Length: 491
Image 1 (cartoon, one colour):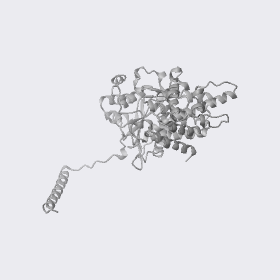
Image 2: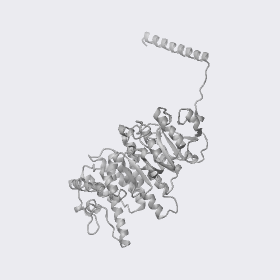
Image 3: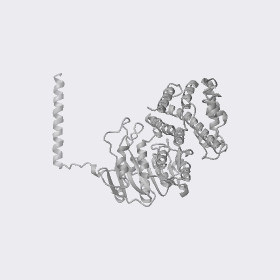
Image 4: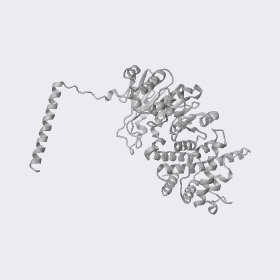
């Protein structure tokens, strides 16, 4: 175990003992805001040092009183930790709750520049509170986090992965926390097939912890020969998304910043409140990657914003994504199995539009259990491009050697064959192609039915079937007689 991982583990152990903390969601939330402020301190100090080298003056975002080295980890004239002047207990709790948080929350109203780091800070602290009941516990945690060095690229890289594991732990906690985490191997397979390029825009209308956007960023930044202008576009103008849930929004923004995306275009906003009839080409995106929520409920006024009205949120999200895709763009979206086979009016209308106006070229059937423990619903990945109508659909059925469980989750190796076959569209034991007319004739049923694995029905002649029934009936009557004899004899 690395030194950094052991520090995070110590912090979680300390927080579990605090009266204000209950479960993985709480301790991840609390670790997050403290880590974020330490990151912000190192970020500003690095900017200040660079400004000095360039003979310029850096304008700090955080006022002196609220900087890390004043309230969290004060140092003396020898640059050593000043224990005597370090707030603790009730003094620390009161400062954090009554001064620090209100100050940071005010940032959102202090600037109109939604891309600025100041606005992002205000947005984060608008929806988060200090839950740590004991000021002594908070002091312990702050002292450990003070030892982290965010100016070290290696340490920042390692911490970003540890943070991903914390978010995964929130998902594994069950309940509603599944919104924070889609298995990273599934996201990676989707990104590796879509292959985003620098200059394209990427959108997720249900951001969660921003896993799709971060994986796309990791993929794109590996491209060689990127200019300064391209790198700036990658960091500031590539990634977009909305998140309805406050805590998920906070986690998503912080996760992106910790991965090096300094100004993510993520907003605390319910995507489904957008009237899709007003979306113009300039508002659309090159690539859409998402795992939108399903089974939720919205107000009646929201259903009226969509051409095809439905109380199935997955159907509303699909309509939103169809309208949000640029000409020539590609989308890869995780949807519940029901979308593919349901044939009521609303589902049929949306699927008809998809097949007629978009190229629904690929559907991946994921195995049951991918999203355990918080959802047992079987899911699929549907790929579509805004470039003509659908002519045929290539299907791939993901197979795993064992049943997926919480402790035996899906792995990238289970998806590797699909990734390798994606562009070839080869037909194998796990993949096949269906002409679009066959789907239309089958009442727009898009569900995956692997022809190599269909059960062959045994056709039995009626007389033979009747004889089997009589034989089974005779055997049952004989068993009943035996049981009655045993009862009569008192055995």
